[in-house]
Image 1 (tube, helix red, strand yellow):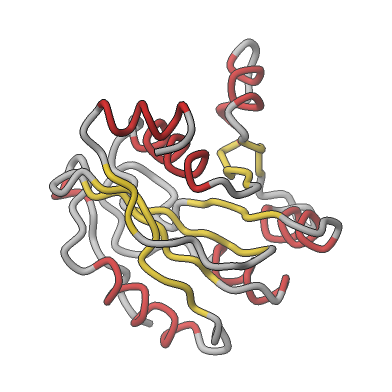
Image 2 (cartoon, rainbow, N blue to C red):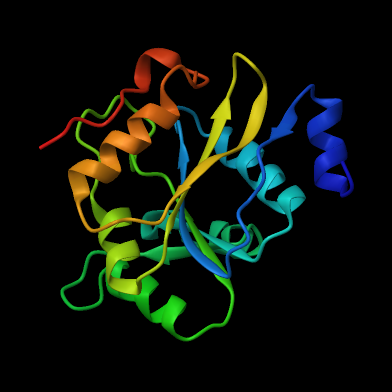
Length: 183
């Protein structure tokens, strides 16, 4: 572990697993997201991996003085306003930079969700970037990358690949993490 973030992870008993792919841009999904502390471990892991990233967070978290902390954390507020929703915000961000990885929780909530929000898929499709599958496993105390999905033309195919990668991964509250159902 080469950074302070990596040293903190190591001191807490966590390991970094998998290599981040050699990509300039991606939508990086990060799951399971079953507790607020996941953001802390995710931030440490992404910092140790050494990529340029931004986390997507709900606009409701950006109230004073929390907004200052959220911005320092590397988070940007997203909202669901017609023609200015998160999908368009992210596509604009990716189109106007040379290097950036957008990190998002596909579940969208820290409660049990059986129908994930498809936003991450539409972001990747519209921006024409791959989906990197990152994870936290509390049972194994691992944070890292499971793989990358380059072929994103078919949503159900993408979800099947994601489900295979997340099979056996345990969240902080394991009963709250459910693999995505296929349409």
